Length: 489
Image (tube, one colour):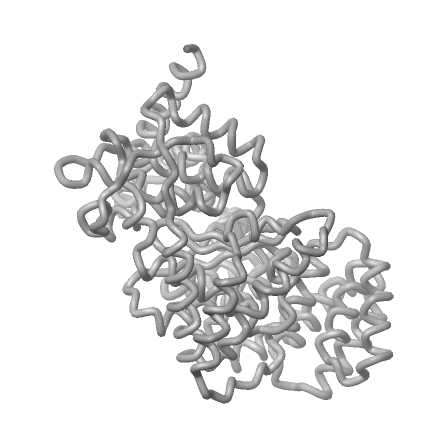
């Protein structure tokens, strides 16, 4: 897809902002840029580039797909973004990477490495980083910082953005991806000012205070990371490489935070519970986690989040009965916490009692209708019991009104197959592959779906979607041809 007229220049506008976060690619040169965000990149351009970027990113890094963790970071982000003044439709996600880093991309795509979330000691510290990244988006730093030197297709722009971000996750991979994607075009010079970082601090602290968080969370977290660097930590946090922190920046942010006289809202435990689950998710040694949480419980008997982490670690170690004992105790003490209901149902399923798991999920859905985590887990359990029609009804009803991410299409495909609907299965799988960046496979599956149905309404809908797939594939092929030409030279 080409963008004409006034929209030719802006497609690479995100490059310099992203390059700030990935100095491994700092040798790449970008052109001097204008200062008007709207002239350089319209919000519509940002949204299109962001969507393409996210599809590209999914092909190269592993995201945390756990629905509870997705819901936590999304809710935290929305709580802060509500005070940002931005009309952007933000998308918050977690990268399954133990390194400490965070980044934002055009269109409001904001990512956090698992390691950064685990490094934060309380929710205000994590919220400080989230607010900082939201501020980069709300202040249009991406659009204000760069401008393309030549007309470039949207897929090319999105691929370069993904390559630069990948440099923060894996410098060699990022360099290789960028070298291929640049396709012999104009070189670019990075030019992102410290003023943008300072402004993101100021706006982010205002956001923290407005949302009811402790505004000291931001400078406190930055200062602790910087102290690790000064003390010669063996591995410098990637966040410090990509978000340069100076003593003056910390002092300025502390002074601004001190200007607020607010009583921060109480942390009701969602942060610590999410952190405990994330630690189990990325930790390979369950036994060491079991000991860790038992030690914490020995020191802090009332730390329910630690008992929750212990239960999850026990489940990971296949000690299902012991895990159920811990969760059932938590359910008695805290009957309203959804995380415990979900954990109990998942453990009932592991204990070969799917009927009890279904009952637990359905009871929870009565209290939390439309909850994406409950719908996904219940659908999986119903499918395991070969109750495909129930799962199909549940998923279709939810997807008409709520989240329609890749995981739901994959589950829907299983439900359609279980109900004997081969064409609908192929269409759902096609959408899953398209949303995860595998367009050729999406086309193959949707073509098979079209061949397998005589339903005229479905045919019309799927043909329209096929045209979108084909346009995407053509753009990818054009980008690939330029990459091949560059490599040949």
